[in-house]
Image (cartoon, rainbow, N blue to C red):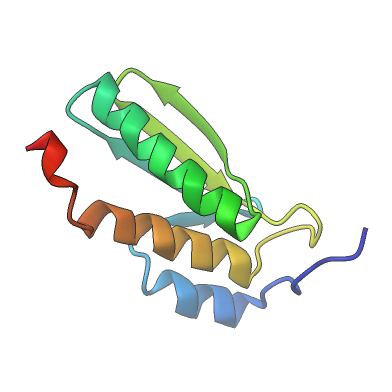
Length: 105
């Protein structure tokens, strides 16, 4: 399988992580843990991430336990981290600051 995007050099990875301070890179994966008020809020967040991931055709490894969500990103086809991982992490971060629809108010 040929990689869609090339694996990031360490300098580019460090530069990208400078814009994602809550994400860590370890063993070829970007990782972040999230905590929400309750299960419903955590699950709603996962649904929004799922839509982003599907649109990007780049799907996270993740887990959920009640109000906690753990997301790990990697580009399996490249054998490590690529710009696609940094881009999806940045899009996930934007979800946290995006206004919610008024139906939840």
